[in-house]
Image 1 (cartoon, rainbow, N blue to C red):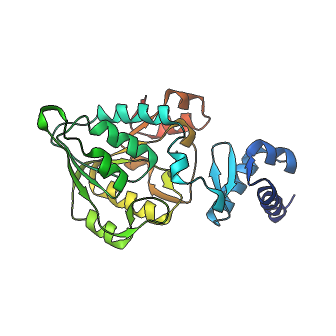
Image 2 (spheres, rainbow, N blue to C red):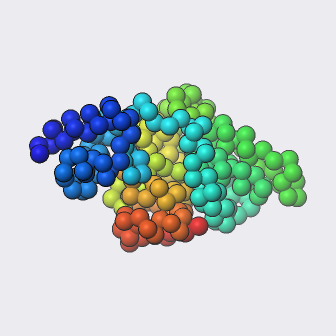
Image 3 (cartoon, one colour):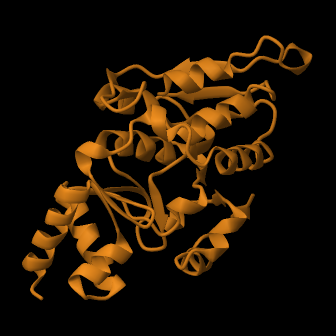
Length: 256
């Protein structure tokens, strides 16, 4: 089957089903999983679909952030608690926008004594904690910029320029996916620009990615594997086929 014919069949499946699994595509097209994986990556790069764990969805059918906030919550909280263990009193950290980093903010609010620079309104609000131990509140700096269409956060050139004014000890970032070849990636190019700038202006880069994001390549890479100092993921990531390649490529992986 020619490549364009496969693309058309995948488009037709998504048009009918809205969401389709990799196994369904393999069966319908009678091709290998690797061929399907390449086709989905190519179609995602063209902006025609969004890859998710185990398959793909139409771009316009991507779950809104309010819905994503309720997925894999336990696994995301495990990551957040592991990240807290990497931090020390008095440090300055970047945190980008996402459902995982909101949960991280809830955990960091219990710590206090940090300076947090973020583009996420939800992260900033969750970091306020008058009851922090010893009265050590977190200083929270919210970056200016344009309002993101997909999340309550700032993005764009102003946001990126403001990031350049700071130097952080750590950048705590949560991507759409992470793989051994491209590193951490996001679906939205403006969100990726913010994450990239945070990584470039931090001493260390910590990626928080639950097991479902292992081996996933999204549209825009923002941090190559060699720049990632720590990947925090779940023990369940061991079951993902792409984990071995990541384990061989990255400096340090924490399993939470």
